[in-house]
Image (cartoon, rainbow, N blue to C red; front, side, top):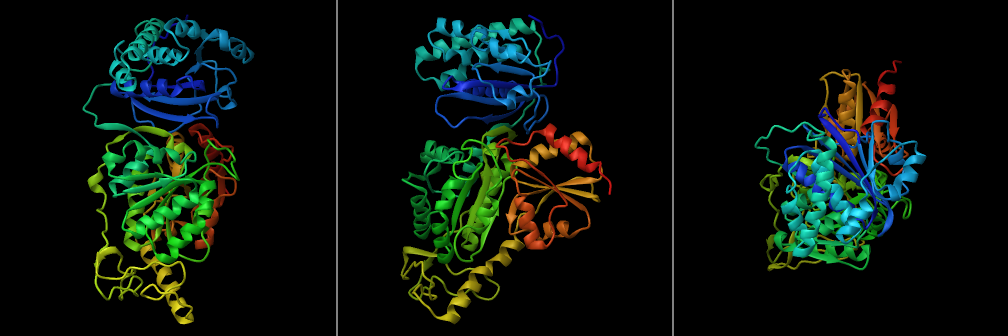
Length: 575
């Protein structure tokens, strides 16, 4: 076999294997041991909508500097199962090293006009007692090509496999792979060995960041009917319910999920439900109930391609308008769209603060790519999150929907049993003390009372992230998870006359963003949907939208290279 002689500053490793072969185990081990060794790591997963079979893939970028976005390049491909997807085969180049089991993959790799390096995984894993050991051999091989120690994953393996005998067998499999990898590179690491420093970063993915942000804001009640990709946040709470002090309810459907969080919030809980587009549709009536009762509720809406079931495990940004207009009638809300992992922590916490401060509904818009991607970040600080806003102790004359005093926006929020006041709740239009009314003047006043909160929500809206020169001819505008790939693409191009504008809050729009939109610069919107939904929303609110758009809607995330190519075409066009 050929040997590698000169270490690089970055490589991209892709794993492809059928569900059930331990792909996630190999990825987790590789990522953790490389981070521990001082490398910066970015990982992203894509997977098919099935429990077993198919062909899932994971990308890991390993670098001596921070990396945060998905790329086309594949330097090392570990192909464990047949039927590689086009998103993999289209990115195989002459420089890609393809490794796997010849008995399973040689025919397919040959049809691509390439040769593969046979690791004889089936036999080696069988000799160890199970086909699943093939993923552990791969993890060991990766440790070997980075010249990590053969014991570099021992503690991780012991933590993952509590059974002593199983742990020992996995260690043996790891060492088999480690020997092969170290021999392959002849003792020279594929990426320069990083200078060890007192780095305090931790690896965090989007699911964990949303959950930790919500927990830091005091979330103590969460419901869900499992639906990809929103289940990861719920699972994090379920695994850590005792530590986080949260009640976790897996319910029979999404209607129950939203109604239970509305009821819990009425009783004083800081509640959230997590779902995806199809589930969120079922929540619309409950969201409207929260709207008229002015009940603080947070919904995590993890976007995936629709309509209907669509592509159940892929990514898209096509639910913005759904979130904005969901629920019958008119009532205010706040929509947050985290742009990266750090933002996911901040915006989840912000959503809770907004919901309780203004007694509105906050919706956190993420997507599969953001949730299932992760990288090294500075450890989030829970103490930076504003403390919970507690219910008042009610008096005998308490009126839940009393009209606010001048300069204020909300009625006093009390809960049953805390104080002497009568606390009521009704889905009809109501009087100040929560009794049903059909009085026309009172109805008008109550609608205006609720909608007036938009003034405060706008005044406190999250400012856009602006990266680039102070004066620019072109604004490249994005929201949500598109940010990091666009940012790296613009850095690659060395854009001097263009600025990147990223929105973490997509409704209501901040005054600062409105100023940018009203300026005479050219505006390019980059979105993961087919119709430019954010551009349409912005145009409806400001009268100005996109001059050009870059859109993607095939179920996969933008890559850095394709964005660089599209932006280069547009930024070089002169009118």
